[in-house]
Image 1: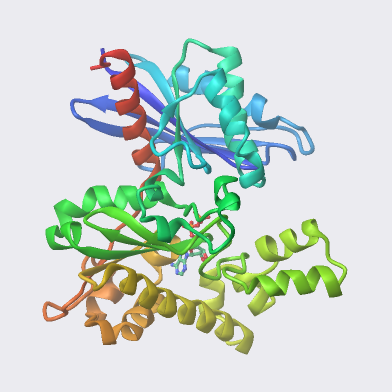
Image 2: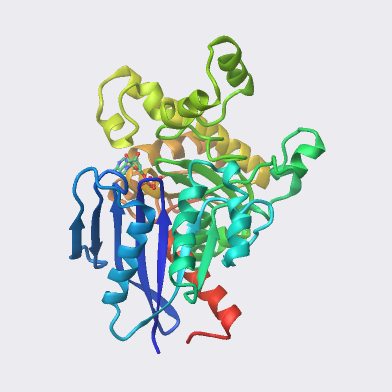
Length: 399
Ligand code: ADP
């Protein structure tokens, strides 16, 4: 019997979902959508992959649907969408798998409580990622659920890439560089063999440039280094996150400026990055269109840090065969791609400006020593694939 997998990505105020159907060996998206405003009057929309709206619903302003109410609504809707297919499982995006989870895992009550133990490592995301898992375990314990982590893909990195130079007992206590955006990088690594076999077998740096932005060095498709570390605030400046800071800045803010941990958290997660530097927007489109000096400075700083991190990741790889751009800015901002490539000319990167402006797949010239690609990421499909694999391996097949 054909089967269906739901993929959920639950944040603090919204749940994004998609429904995939098994069709032979492939997984095809059937429905995508979201419920947002979970605590302020929710809005639900469900669409076919071509964008046609299949269902919509709004709750009154101020009504708190919450994560539980949203999940109940979603599961009801998705079951009603299925005619010939059977819902065989839910795959969840979970930001943190700690040191323990190097692979996706089928979640039962025991695993859930282990994942709850990682909440202090990602307090802004982990509780929301876990909320629908808990609800579905209560409501439909027979429905298999699989947690797919943003950290797992990086667990194969060399020890030195995962360490801070702190006393050993702190590493044992979990203070290490985890790296994030792993599902995005894993998806890119999974499609690279069909696009560029040299890059797939060689040394590639992937730039995931969205609201959250990071970079990852791939050696033969495996992560060997990444710019994000203990949290998703390390590395590049992002929409509203500062990226790497001298830790002395934090101490100074706390000692001399009267800021407590919550105030620093707000500063480095929500008030910094492109928004903080420009003073008015975290949106790359707005900044690129602006004449303001501060907007230019924010973009310049973003590019400067990319240039430096690229050098660092290429050093970790010992050379470079390809660059891949992905996520909102990487996929849609030719001006940013052009400048990143021109800054990387010393590495043998030669951009084909016409191909870049037209939004082609390959944007380097034929003569370029380093191939440059634009590849749309697909974390949802990666989660659906993982979920299918875990269910097949734990249940003897769902073909
Ligand atoms: P998230 O991390 O929230 O998933 P996305 O991957 O959707 O983020 O990326 C959002 C970012 O992509 C925003 O900064 C947005 O301005 C930028 N972006 C989207 N389209 C364009 C575009 N055409 N030109 C420049 N930036 C763009």
